[in-house]
Image 1 (spheres, rainbow, N blue to C red):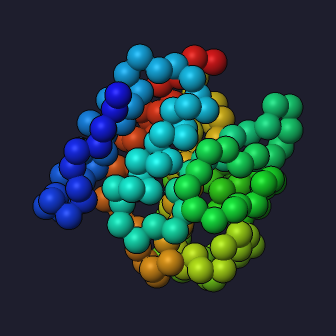
Image 2 (cartoon, rainbow, N blue to C red):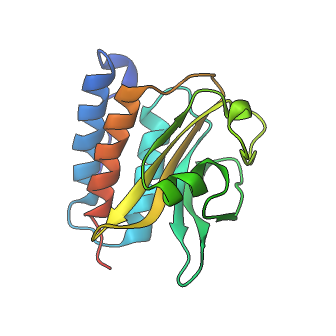
Length: 166
């Protein structure tokens, strides 16, 4: 059985924190090839390990549709469907790159699933060069995320994308 053994308060900075996140994810994904199981465990781990989050989870592209559908997450109930090109999540899919938003109220077309969210980081998920969904993190703290978070979560998203069978 997997057990997370490092508390975030024991770590000395974001670089060490994200190295530990990667180590923990490798342990969670080891031997498990189910996408939903791995997304659920990754959401829980990120919500547990990363400070100042109020939502951590996934949206996956619906088959044959131009929309994202909510997947496993931790936090308050979320918007179920988001059109590609809309909000931060849909824009990350359309533009095929991570989007870091220091103030969600300043992002044109932001979709407020939780009014408490003030900043957001969305990382697209790639399989065989195609976007298949996003990893979405929200915080009630303005400017919570930075480039170090972006890099750490892009590496975590790549681990996730390689963890499951199609």
